[in-house]
Image 1: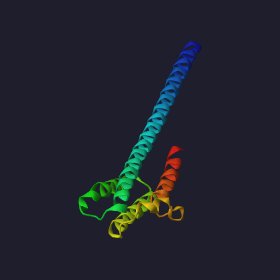
Image 2 (image 1 turned 180 degrees about the horizontal axis):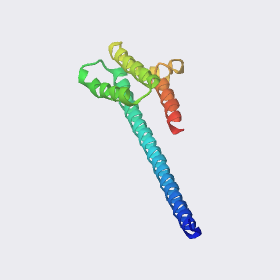
Image 3 (image 1 turned 60 degrees about the vertical axis):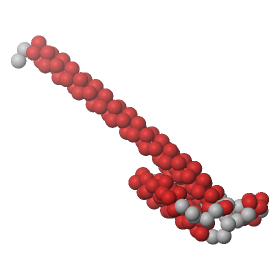
Image 4 (image 1 turned 180 degrees about the vertical axis):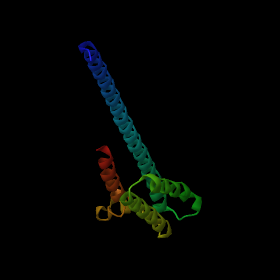
Length: 146
């Protein structure tokens, strides 16, 4: 075989290997960027969902504190949000959301409370049913950030 052919084949092989390496690098970079985008979107969806749950649960707990459950349809939106958490959330977060939902139901069926209870700091834990849920959300979202 002539030396010119060997040089030409070596140049073609090197060019093919370079093209393949460039293709592989581009594919890996795009794959990593796509995965990062999906993780950011998932985290944003969870943040929005948990924020929606906190708003709805806070409103219902405040209502339950002063009123009886005269219209069960008030709880429908909260049940819907908890079921979305079942789809996207971690088990610990779901357990806390269910606990908050039970607590709201119990509060609706307990005697109405006076607003002066808010001033008594000894009962502050009773007035914040979302504290453990928020802590579970924070832990879950910290893991999702990695």
